[in-house]
Image 1: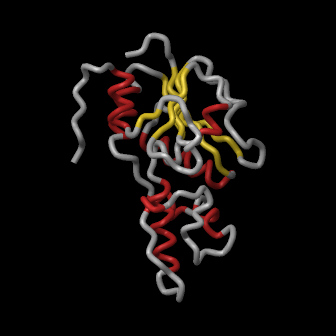
Image 2: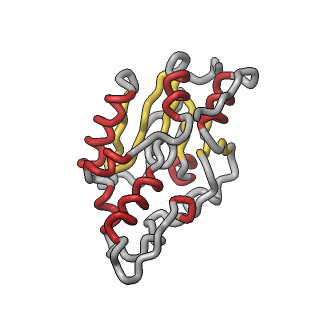
Length: 196
């Protein structure tokens, strides 16, 4: 456990939950019968605007984020739920996420069902392009977007997961998955067992 950190600030999309996976599932479901359709796998997506989903007209993919079926399909990144539950015994956890009002309201409900004691901080995209207005000076911030990390005042910042176009410029600490985060924050000697 880290004594210098009180709070863990955790991004939602692409960090806590497998957003890309769900978006391409919805796209593949909606466009499978279109003439120019090619099946999209989540691991082939490398653009912020899901340009790989080429049958979708401009703005269409953004609508998925506000739909209840997005949240019905949504699932945690591997080991994330277990890690958050364990880490919440030692740290205050706050989920900080970008979105528009319908998206943020549904995210808050989704979080409260799974983590009743975790605070959700919604950041409206109409007002803020990053998360720099959130005071994170008492903690560590985990996000998959380098733009959010470089503008944060957190004591420490960690880029989560794979290298994507939206974080390839990141030169700081990067942890690939929640097993690594759990090990990093709870101590090197902790055993990490992979969930089946």
